Image 1 (tube, helix red, strand yellow):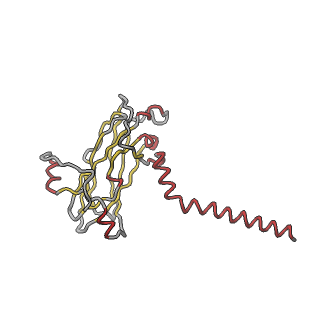
Image 2 (cartoon, rainbow, N blue to C red; image 1 turned 135 degrees about the horizontal axis):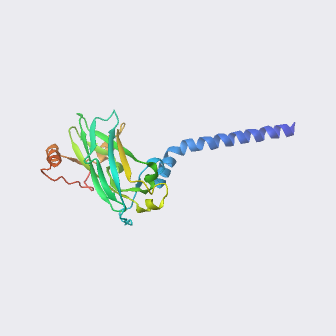
Image 3 (cartoon, helix red, strand yellow; image 1 turned 135 degrees about the vertical axis):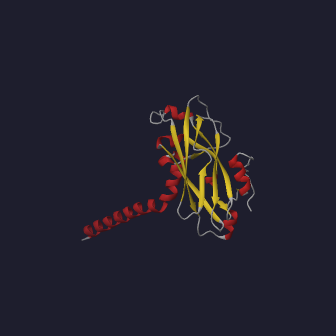
Length: 216
């Protein structure tokens, strides 16, 4: 009897341990997965680079294409200023996206991103990007938002990525709901006047982007 009772306890203990092992990853999976992707570039996740780091430069070049999407719940126009750019490996370049709030209310959005083909993602770095923070646009406001990036020349040493010559950087903007007034006020507001933006797009006037613009 004691032997059978001991076996039952052992089985119960094993069952509990298995439940714990199965539950803990589910609880922590989202944050762990995001951290893993950010560190490794897994699943097309772009990696963030330190602005103080100087990458090695190669004579090889790749063409980077830019894609823009918005969630149906976000009434913004969102597109890149240019469809593509030729990038020298290891050489930082800055490109711009345009976002316009077509609604009659202030909206906070957040962009998510990935890179294809996935084999190029571990070598695709962003030094600065609007996707690092929440972005706030008032009704009718527009923003010209930069992305500073480079493609690591170490890609040439990876047999799975060495022959890649075209890379697509894709963004999707999502509406940030259920924010407090403090969170809305704390979102970065980098809008420019509509007329200034129209003049810029027409090539009549320069528009600057202050990456350290104060929040208001």
